[in-house]
Image (cartoon, rainbow, N blue to C red; front, side, top):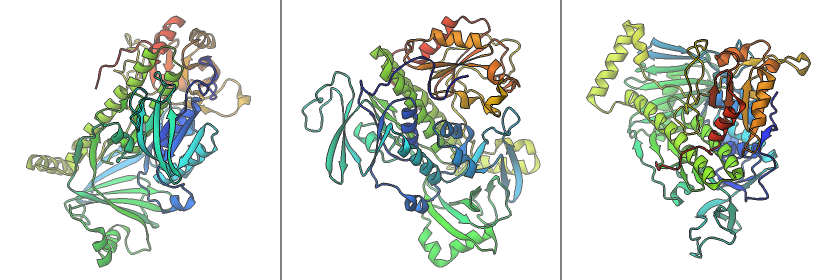
Length: 574
C-alpha cells in the first residue's frame, strides 16, 4: 500500500539546504493551497500577504464570494489536510434544474461516483469561500514548513541575472539560483531570496504587473446583484437557474443553498444598477421577498459585480508563476474560477518540487514550462466555455438574442431542446491528453470499457476494501496516493518492480497494489482496463501513462521520467 507521507522509490532528502524557499504572494485560497501543496512535497515556502493578519472577525465579516466546490477540488483539500471540516459543513447537491418563465426545461443529475457512492466525495458542495480559506489558513499556520507573513506587500522582483531595485545587478550567489523579492511592511522595506515566486495575489496582481505580463480580455455590460440570505425556505438542496422569471423579467436569477440556512441568490441587473439606492427605497426588500416570501430573513452579505473574461498572456515567466485570479478571470456561471485556481496551485507545486530536485537544469526548465502550457490551455478552455455561457445569458447581438429566445421557447415543448440551454457548464478537471508530459495511449484493449480513463485524464476514485480487514474500513483510492508519483498495478510484485525501477528520479514513486487494497474490485472497475494494466499517476492525480498488460518496468520508468520533464520538448513560447 502506498503511503501518504511520500515514502517510495525516487527522490530522497529535503531541498531546503540547497535552495532558498519558494515565496507565495497572496494568502487567499489559491495561495494557501499552493503553500500547503509545496509543504507536502517537502518544499519550504514563505507566504506574503499584503493585508493584515486574519482572525475570526475577518472570516465572519467576509461574504461568501465563491461557494461551489467540485469533487476533485475537495480531493485536493483532503490531501492537504483541510478537507474534512469543509466537506462535513458543506451543503451537498447533485441536481441542477433550469427554468424558463417558471417552467422546468432542463435537469442535470451528477452521479455520486464509483464504488456505491457512500464514503466517496460528493460531486458538489456549497460552502462560503471564507470558510474554506479559514480551514486552509489553519492548516498552513500549523505546518512547520510554511512561514506566513501578513502586512507584506510585494513591490519589486528581480530574477537572477536581472538588475535589482538599485540597478546593481543580481545579488551575490546567483548563477541561476532564484529571485530577489522586495516587500513593503509596517517596519519598512525587506528583501528576500526565493527559488521561485508564485503570484496568487488576485485580479490586480502586483506580481503580474511587475513581471510585465499583459492581461487582455473583456467585461460584460450587465451587472449581477449577489445576496446571501439567511432564512428557512422550503427549497431543496439544488442549483436552480431561472430564465425570465416573473420576479426578474427579461433577465436571470440563480439560487443556491449554503450551510446555516443561508441562500445565495444572484440577479442579473442592468448596467447602472444602484444597490444603495435600491436598499434605501425598500426595493431591495421587495426584490428579496419575491423569492423568500413573507417570512423572516436576514441579509448576510450583498455586492454587485461586473463579470470579466481575462487571461494572462503567459502564466510562467522564468521562475515566476501566476495562478488563480492573477492569471485568469471567468464569469462565475459554471464555478470555474476558484476551482480552476486550486488546480493551478497543485499543478505548479509538484512541478516546482521536481524542478528543485532535477539534476539537469534543462529538464527543470522544460518541466516548469509545462505549467504554462497545461494550465494556459485549461484557462483558454474555461474562457471558451464561460464566454459561450455569457453570450447566452447576456446576448450582445440581435442574432444571439433570437437564438436564445428560440432555444428557450422550443424547450417548453421539446425536452430534448433543453440540452441547448446554456446556464453554465459546470467545472470539471482539464484533460492533459496533449501535454508533453503525457505518454500517448496505445491501442485500446478490447476488454477496456468505452469510458475507461485515458492518459491525461484525472484518475477515477473508488472505495477500496483492503485485504487486511484489521486495517480499518474501506478507503478512497485517491486517499492512498502520496505527494509523489504512484504506480498502480493489480499484483504487488508488478507495482513494486516498477517503483524500484524509478530510483533516482527527482520525485518519489510509490507502488500501489490493487490485490492488497481492492479486494472488492471497485477500484479496478472504476479504472476500466483489463487486469495487468499499469497506471502511472502524477502528484496531482492525473494519469501520465496507461500501459498495457505485460509492460516491462523500464517503460514505466520512461513514462514517469517523461512526466518529470526529462523527455519533454524544449520551451516553444506561448
